[in-house]
Image 1 (tube, one colour):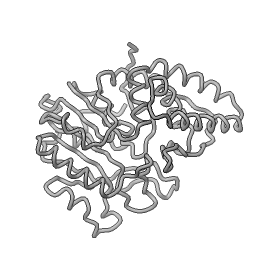
Image 2 (cartoon, helix red, strand yellow):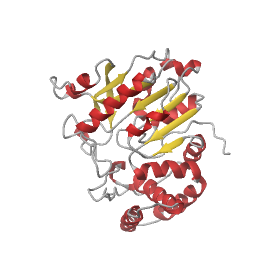
Image 3 (tube, helix red, strand yellow):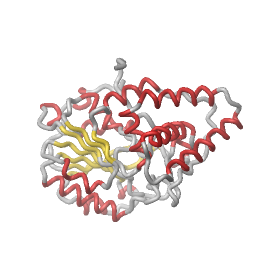
Image 4 (spheres, helix red, strand yellow):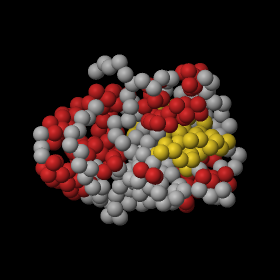
Length: 317
């Protein structure tokens, strides 16, 4: 086991990642995490996993379940869990080669890697070697593609262009740390509606789905070929009410539609009986500078007691 004096953090960039929002989110962690009455964690739309790694670093959890509908993303988690050393060996060599290349060669390498990943992804069944190669390609492309996006076309192919980055430096130490803390995590790739059997009254659930678009500038829901629409948001709201009846502590984040239209009551209607808090969030996915920065977010929770003195409990080092 590799020993490092730091906590693991997300190992890839993902649209809607919550690293910058962690100081706010910690104020909404349930109080039961402190005394152990809540000792299970579930994240149905894990994305980059900022909250996941934060909780794994600070609490003793007896069961952790993460899920995402994106097969490539979940494959990265599975390979990080099972075969992080070999994954790092591949990326070390690709990094060495890439950093010695001329710009036009780097661009050629990028598109070759993109084509190879898409070709491998089209296989109906992925074996362990397929998963390793797909994860390595995904992490390389995530570091070198435009704005760190993951986007698929209607055929399911990754189609983000090259970002002309001259030098890449993977955080291999963090990958080792992520691999260690993921060892006992249940990693799933299915619809969130199927996760109910893993929910108990001692479970904390954080749900960070693709945000409902407030306007075209910040709209980005095409993480996979099947976009997350209002019908999916309603399904998610109904599932949240189902888990609430099971006694779980559930926290959700989403866009604040009233920041664009004061008469848009989509979430206040959907989550009646839940506590809804407008917060100031940050996005880093718009390619337009004018579209970046602070936007209106909502945090939605059921009736659990919030963690006391959350700001004093953690450091962001």
